[in-house]
Amino acid sequence: MRDFLRHADARTPRAFVQLLAAQPPRPSAAAADQCHAAATKLGFLASNLFATTALLAFYCRSRRLPEAQHLFDQMPARTAVTWNTLIHGHARSAAPGLAVAAFARMARAGVSPTASSVSSVLVACVRLEDAAAGATLHSVGLMHGFCASVVVGTALVDMYAKCHHLGAAQQVFREMEEKNVATFTALVAGFVLSRRPHDAMLLVREMERSGVAPNLMTYSSLLSSFASPEDIDHGKQVHCAVLKKGLEHDQFVLSALVTMYSKCGILENFVKVQMSVSCQDQLSNAFAGDGRWGNAAEIRETMSDPL
Image 1: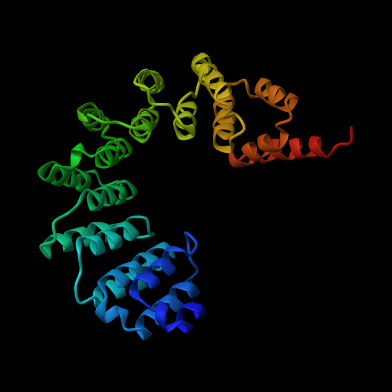
Image 2 (image 1 turned 120 degrees about the vertical axis):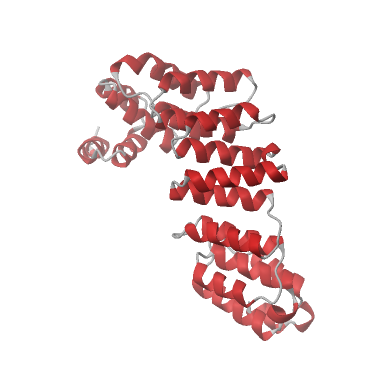
């Protein structure tokens, strides 16, 4: 920031925006304050909407939502991008209800919604577990033609599934012409949440037949659906798929495997196999992540024993 202020010929709104973009994904509070002070000193806040919107996004990235809201309220003009930036920040903050409120305020201001604003507010609806607000957003999406977007469609599937409206999630899923790994994984997670492991397994098979490869989140979610000895055959099939793709050392997948084998009553066998292939460290972390501190400590002791 000092270098930026020292070179008069570089102190342009575009250079300021580039400076903000070069900062870490989650900048510090001090960095946000320094950038705000520089923008004020150079007169950008009063004269350049592009630079001010970039600063607004910077505050959201640094999780300084009160400051972001204050900056937004002081802006003499706002575009849809400005509104979307604030809505996106609130949707992922400690107060997601403010994203819903900002979206309503955006409509009252006569600014048309975008696919980005709708998908962001749907994220807030998930966190609020507010299916009614999500259904209203669904209507807005249909009215503006946003539901054809894979991003909005996936957000709708995720919202309905996590708000326990699985029928609505399935309907949106069926109506989508384009689906990606996130779309399939959202519905898999919905089946898991509704304790329908067989349907989750069938959906993953459909996913593979359609040419969409499951990812770490898909496998982790699917594994967590197997919770009884009757499910162990399905669980082992998924475990084999994980091994074929070389994903067995991922911490999320390993934690899901620990949970699955534990619920199915054969955790001891799984531990023996993992210990035999030098996965002790990851296995210990997986036990700790599953709240099995005693098992984690035992494995740590084994690792420290001399040969």
